[in-house]
Length: 477
Picture 1: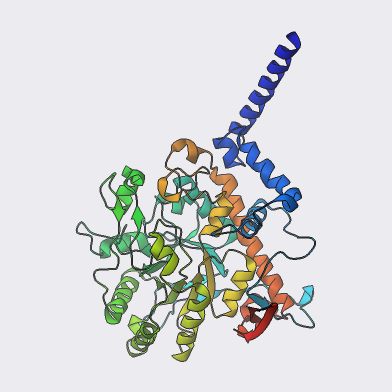
Picture 2: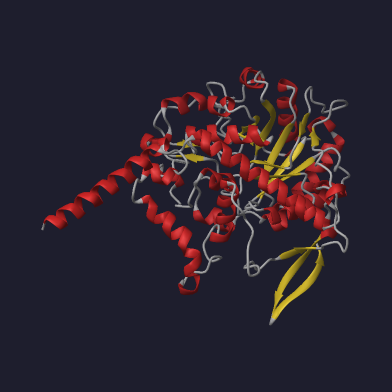
């Protein structure tokens, strides 16, 4: 009996010591939020590799991101090796055409970056933006994300030398406090730049542009999660601070219109872009989800006829993209996937000779180096990711984003859950993830015989079609 009591006391002391360790450390959000119990997750994650032959669920079966993709991001963010053994588990839909004589280390060059916006002529910006890197953080609103997550993203972006977009929720102090270059997104409700009646306010635009960190503005027509429907932020997430930033009532559902009320055709879109650029002096882009291809030709013809209407960039979001809450029918079935949308827009831009005037940005599950390099080959000048950076923050794909009950604090509203996400530690992880992507895209470029990723084109990648009994090569593009 005495022995049992001693054992019980030792176990209790051990559990207590583990609990004290977990709540004090800052590297693992799950352990801070779920002390002791959280170790079972890490045990399963670590030892699962050795139990693969007994698993009924393969690594590539989970959705929307499978275990292989998530693991790559986690390991990159933690700064541990991503080398694999015993061959690839991937079933790729494309492959890069490697050169017979790849680039030697002494032949490699640093990526030189690209400038967005022009400094002279119709449609010029007072402050064009030279973006140093091709992989950046896509729009995620404060409110949808916790303040700790936004601050960590801003810190990580600053460290990695990349930009971050605000999402349609407006500019917060957490975006600015981390020091990152910022893209201010203007959604259909015009949060952060609206007057009392919900219309675009030139004074608010100037106020936002007064921040030196705000380098560009982005007019959001649509997002991949829900083309044709505006943003949705449940009332439980609309705190006094978020309500003040957005200019809406506290505690009420924040539901944006399904389109800009003052943008109903190509001419009005061009006039809106020109107004924002004129007032702010910053380059202005437009975020779209590709659908009707006739729209692209009409839009680009208007850009040629009215150069002041021309956007400085177009952000193409695939129908598979999106972090926001959305009806399943829109998330699953509306909007072209990025694999079709990006080549479509790139071809239309080239057809009208606007490659040097309009930069092309791509988003939509492009979270690993292979997909980023593919997008660059297809004509993208830059690639953006939202969910990849959520994984870098510690997201475990619990699918609780809209509820506010995110167990890792990324999209939580509960202060106890948010407390588990340490912005300093997670900022470093964001930076590491971005740097690993940039580095491994460069490795692919060197394998293809390029000195840097700036030389990618469609001749460097080939699509693979799955046929009966194996694969067949369908050629470039």
